[in-house]
Amino acid sequence: MFSKILIANRGEIAVRIIRACRELGIETIAVYSTADRDSLHVKMADQAVCIGGAAARDSYLNISNLIAAAKNLGADAIHPGYGFLAENPYFANLCQTHGIKFIGPRADVIEALGDKVRAREIARAAAVPLVPGSDGAVNSYEEALEIAENIGYPVMIKASAGGGGKGMRLAQSRESLKEALSTARLEASSAFGNEQIYMEKYIEEPRHIEIQVLGDEAGHLIHLGERDCSLQRRNQKLLEESPSSCLDPATRKKMGEVALNTARAADYYSAGTVEFLVDKYGQFFFIEMNTRIQVEHPVSEMVTGIDIVKEQIRIAAGYSLSYAQEDVKLDGWAIECRVNAEDPQRNFQPSPGTIGQYIVPGGPGVRVDSSVYSNYTITPYYDSMMAKVIVWGKDRPEAIQRMKRALNEFVIENVPTTIPFHLMVLDNAFFQRGEVYTNFIQRRMSNGR
Image (cartoon, rainbow, N blue to C red; front, top):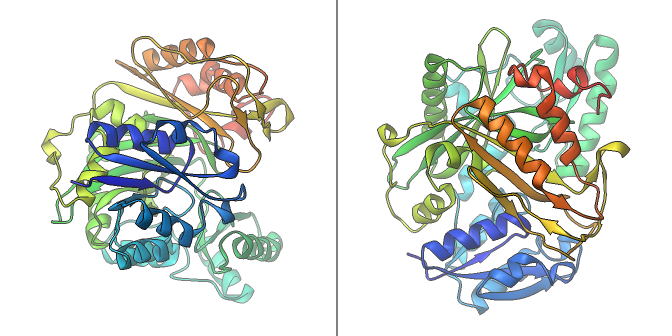
């Protein structure tokens, strides 16, 4: 087992990893920017080192400083968390070059699956169902027009190197295709330094369902069931649950098998997520595979009892999986709400500031993954997420009621948050019936926000 892990991240995921390491008896090194000097992950780690200025490019994206910190402080592994460098194959490869274990899959696997066009090719070779669309990258308007006319409108244009909803544009007709194509290219180039795009048939009223997989370096693979991440705003997830109210046991089993086939075809190990769209007829289609821990991983932990981060670390240290597929049982229902420092009344505008009183909810079946505390100042430099509230119930109605109770207990003074918005969602009759699609907010929330 590793003796010391450097966590190349910040916020709640850094705190989450520190806790897993502590339970495994591993020392931790926190890195921080000048803006994060007083952050909780810095206070909790065994050692901490400043790696640069407030801007992410000067600190959390500064690869040379991260490697130097790991070498100088004797880390034998680096955990990238999610975001920042978690899916950067160059960083993963450089860790290996310097004799530091990257806690994640191999660099070549990250590179292959990070390119959405190549990922589709891997999935196609494994006979995984794909959304109808381009066979590869789309290089011209004329090519895009031909594909769109063939598969039918509406079509979704996506960045090949994309993620987080960036570089995505919907074209409803031939007239809107050219502008959507141009805008998607510009946004993809700006966000990812790669303007390559591809096209898919737009699935109307889709559910966004993902399967959590775990694999070790000996080739053993398991899945931990599904998460329903359909409740989104501008392609950003807001609330997740496990299991999904739209899957029957047969579809769940089939999706799990398809996810494992995808991972197997990519020669995958570590924690990863295979993502699908499910249409209103129950058909499912592969969209991408994420090669990292996900923000929403706690809902899978709550219904399976499996600590995904600890498994991820054990796998990186060369251990076999602690579980076989027959050991994985889904028990009850879990829901996660992301509590962001954003003002729903002002179109979810980020709301940095200094928190006053901060009281987290508790009681049966409630978990809070957080990185802030009373008098902590939320800066404008990073993602606005402050905490994740995760609840477990024996069934979905109990989980909904428990989440409402927990959110009403949560006290965060001085900073507007998304808690009132989540309470509106939980009270929504369509949500309570499980009628949730990726366009739920636009269709079912009165103000469309």
